[in-house]
Length: 358
Image (cartoon, rainbow, N blue to C red):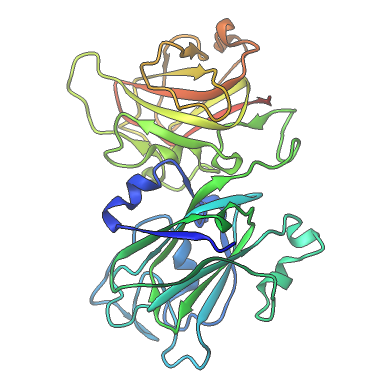
């Protein structure tokens, strides 16, 4: 059955896909396997999690510099293409965004997306090099060709074929030209038990496991979704930072829907790169919810203390809380959500919740 495609106005893209994960992000380990051409600008730029930038006076050896993927003129084939391996074990794709920011007389006129599920990756019967090959024929259409315009965000909501699951996608650009970013909005399918576990524990909150930020009091500088990224990042731009508060008793908070419901054994609150703007203290609570239930409000009476009391934080430090640091009220409970509270405000690089999946 053909997928149902709904075009989303650019002004509504962030709202419509607010509670999804951008799967086509190098921050989530997505990477380019192959491409037809990227003579003017590298296809790797498509996966940059940051917004495109424009440098009007910058020229390089091949011509004008662009923050995106740009191919040669006069493509003899119907389209240019790029094959991307997602950084997660599997994904459902709910929306596709193609951003043509700053491409005006050289943008790709149409975009389409195809996908395939090959969970074995390099070690399975279907290898990455097979999928990366120009002659690979196992693609399934996720998004049929759609019109694009110059220097604008355009997105389409997918119902049907987006359910996948998918591990690899191929972006088609008709006939040639430039796209600044590809963003794939969807849901991560967690890997089977034992994959990536350490000491019997798994990172229940990680975006790679399907963790999603579903609400925050303030995201003035950077989004709360950055809390769930793998690794420790590069600078303050890939953490969560709120505006300065002036009100008495102010706190900021972020609610995370865990990718894996489970019991909690260890918390990590990392303030790496936040040296003069880390929170004075932090609190962590959990919520016991049924699968598929509505996400709790920040003031829901059902929140249970996981971290025992408020804990002071330091600059540029990975704070580890386990054992006696955790509240006895949380013991044995299967949590669906956690809430990180900053007292009174500031920035945190990562929140990691380790435990055992239900």
